[in-house]
Amino acid sequence: MVLAIRRQVDDPDPTWLKRLGEITAETLVLDGGPRSHIRPGQVAELARRIPRSRTETIPVGHLIHRDAPEAFTTAALTFLRAPQTAGSTDSAVRPAMKEAPAHSQRSTESAK
Image (cartoon, rainbow, N blue to C red; front, top):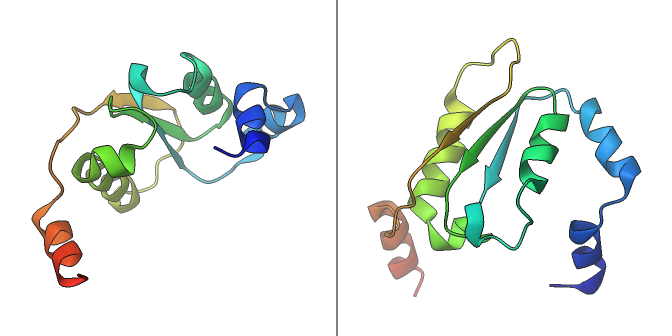
């Protein structure tokens, strides 16, 4: 990880955190769970500051899209396809899925 980005993750600028409350769109926050290098509580704090956020935990670490592509895709598509709500925050835990969806496997193979 680039050191400049690492410092932002480990010790974010307080102004940045304060401005999260200005986000007006519904927001999906994905949490990689205890295997992630993001300290416990940081993801919850970030989500708490975004007024219309939804948090999902896929406990595979930080690289959710790589390590659990099916769970990542399901979470993202479910969020994007859901009707917009008036805005309470909620959270969910989705079990990690080991294999990519069949369509992703075919895409990868046809790209070779």
